Length: 310
Ligand code: ARG
Image (cartoon, rainbow, N blue to C red):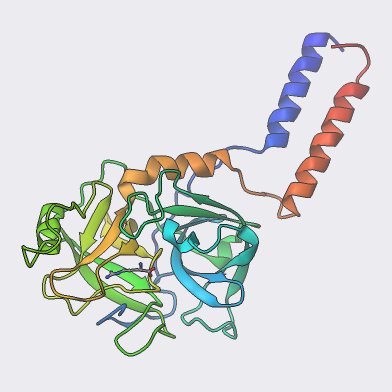
């Protein structure tokens, strides 16, 4: 074989061995029907099929999350305050309650955790976003992903969107049945003003950063809450469900003039797409790291065994 042919062959093999860059699914945001969560109501089975529960070993549910891809969950960075070790976490997919006894659920192992690099691990910090890569991508029958917005998506104040989660309700620390709540998007300046009421307190500080989005009610009463974090805030845009926010923080829950604050997803779609593309999932479903290494060794041996020098 000519040496240029060997070079091309080797190059092709290497590209194959690395796996293809991954893109986000084109079919997304389809639900079967289309609190703390405080003031919400029980969701119906199959209504929010992208909603997942993030579990930490020994404790159970700590945060919500959403499936954006067979192998990827979007959640909040602050969910990993206690640990960023993937082996401590698992992702519960499917099902309406937090019970592991439900049929039709999958408990998926976590391969890697990607916390937004500039996140500061403080309560109201910017960049409260993280991606969780599953050890093995889910089968199409196991999930429906939510759609991501375009980076320039205009989020019009007053748009009615939905937040879902198993977080605290008025009565309990965690809700056993997934709760859903409709909340209007708020103008960031209006929200900033609310956070300064009464005027004397908290003056001088800026709360609502450019990568945040408020949703909720001036009068309080209805809001996301502790345990809902990382979960999705979704709106219907062009008849698909698009995730515009991630439950991030609030002062208390459902208090007057203290609406829920969400990570503004359009600000991070580039980072999400880049992270997913740069970290291809294990397509064959075999034990990823070991088999990738084996494949590489095999290819190198093959290339060396080809007659003649490069
Ligand atoms: N930080 C909370 C959590 O870890 C979520 C708070 C949302 N608060 C609110 N008032 N909307 O679960």
